[in-house]
Image (spheres, rainbow, N blue to C red):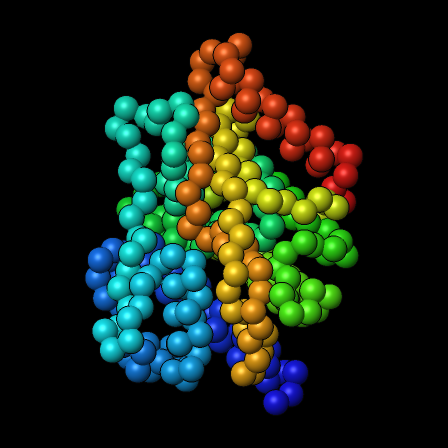
Length: 289
């Protein structure tokens, strides 16, 4: 199969995977429920059953579903940490979907993001945008988004082909996913602007020669959400029928820690949020390009 053919197969798997994640988060496939059969999914997406099977293996490796031969696939991770009616506790375990909802609850948003790819943010932002467009939630008037991603020419420690650590294709696959998600994120923001809910958008991406092992989101210099990347051994699709055994990062849907600076400016938690913001600003100014 040609290189273009391999790219088409990999792109189809990624497209199916992203849509399945979205449907699970939107509770179109509720937690504890069964996914449609592989045949039904293949027909719905207009792809082969092999493509669906590959996407389901990815979902299973990420902890979204549990599959059993002959019994189908059951959703095991769909719920998000609820938002407390009295406002969030100042430090708490939280999921990223909850945090993105909190971001959209602000009239003006300044969001600083440091991560490996924009995959998670793209997923949750698209889901939140659907809610904005159907009128179920409001949207901010202004969004300023600064995103730092690793430099494209730097040597990343993961993902890594276990049998061939110098295999560049696993990293190229990651960069391809990052590029597609970044383009999708930009389109989502532009659609929010075009359809009127958001009056002003400022979006800037810079690259930094630092390999992130965690994702960090800073909201309006007063709140932060941080989630550590987990490493796992799993099969990675490189294109066509080729898969390799690799060490990879699992990040989509990761649970992290939320911090709120609060009204006290001299306590430990306020200092933690400020230190994270100062750290981000220093990389943005002196290393990122």
